[in-house]
Amino acid sequence: MTYSYNPTGNASNNFNDYRLPRVQGRPLPNVEQIDPIGLSQFRNVAPQTSRNGIVDISDTGLFRYNDALQKATLRSSGKSQSLFENNVNDLQMFGGSQQSDNGAIVQSNVQVLGQRGENGATNSVNIFGDVQDSYQSGTQNARNEVLARKVDTAIMDGDSGASNRFTGTFVNHLVMAGANTPQLEGARNDVIASEKVGQILTAAYNGGSSGLFNQVGSWEDRAVNATTQILAENMGQAYLEGQGNKNHLTINKSIKELGIGESANGNTNNITANEGIQRFGLLGKNNDNTVFSFSGLEASEAVLQGTKNKTLYGGNGKQTVRVGGENNTSIIATSDLTGREFKSDHDRKVYAAQQKDTLELGGKANKVQADLGVGNDDIFVHAGSKNKDNQFEVVGGAGQDAMTLEGSKRDWKALRNQDGSLTFTHRRFNQTVTVADVEDIRYSKKIESSKIGFNAPAEA
Image (cartoon, rainbow, N blue to C red):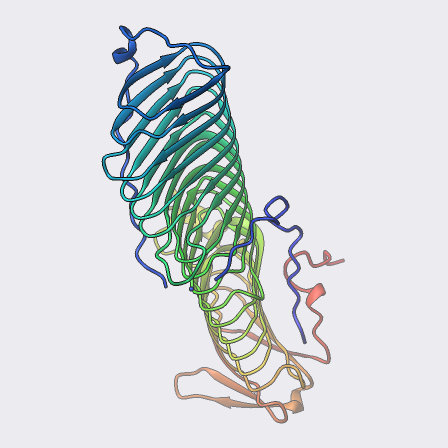
């Protein structure tokens, strides 16, 4: 029996040209917020005239322009603050030392924004309008900050302690990256988007990124030895393919689809969806996963596969959990009502009766401990050349639970243990399953995944 997990879509559509490599997790830093500059100080500053729509500011002081500009370059070696009252087609901010502090206010739109610095330089801009493309980078503790309304593409990267902060309402494409080589400390990126982010890509080496979002369309991770923390209200898709990363994802509502892909290796993933993950698929190897899907009464599916993965999977709802792959260790806890409040004992009983879980067990040399909590649950255990050498322990919990063993009754040897549990061992394929609080034991010549659990055809 081989399980399949096929994502219904790929999170990466527009990031194919942004491909950065792979490697040492560190605690996620907090990027300090730069104090915004105020408009009042420009009241007595006379507007200056640009040269053919081009401005190059290298001096310190206050500067004001009220005509639309083709390009504005800010490169002061000290503190410089500028007010642009009209559109700026191309705004570039540079800094080379800790004394370099470029600040700007743009009261209209910017087409292209670039912030680059080194050696502790600071660049900050408040854009009242929209931005087409924003690029923040730097090295040696450079600090960049952007406050804007709406941005099509925002790319954040850098190394050696560079830090980037972006605050806005809507971002269509967001890249949070790190260093170009594994030897360098990566960039530190903080993002707040109050409305929606269409696509997120985390990439490159050793980055530390955090995001506070409302709606997220998709997140794809291709980073190496990075730390990413994302808190959002809703998320469509997430597809994680990185290596050596620490990922923390908390969704207040639901995730439509979450996949940990074949290339994912050596990651630590902590994922919580307070209204459930509709479909969760685990591949890859050597990943340490803690996943909570609290889907209430909604149907959901988790497919735990790959090689040498360690997974704690828990939650509630009409959960289907399928275990496959090889040499994986899984702890599964479903339909646990601990901490859940009900108005009456009747409401509790009604809710518990709807917590019907399906647990499908297979693969090779897997170890599983499962507690299915309340509800009338179904357990299915595969046995065959592709499903052997496993050790399963299942507690059915409250309710009328049934276990179906693949093969005939004579294929399985049953032993009652001193604690009252039953251990079934397949005579040829070394499948061992110990069950407690399971009321009905059945046998089936063949177990077909498509006919059980999530999206199974309705019973006639």
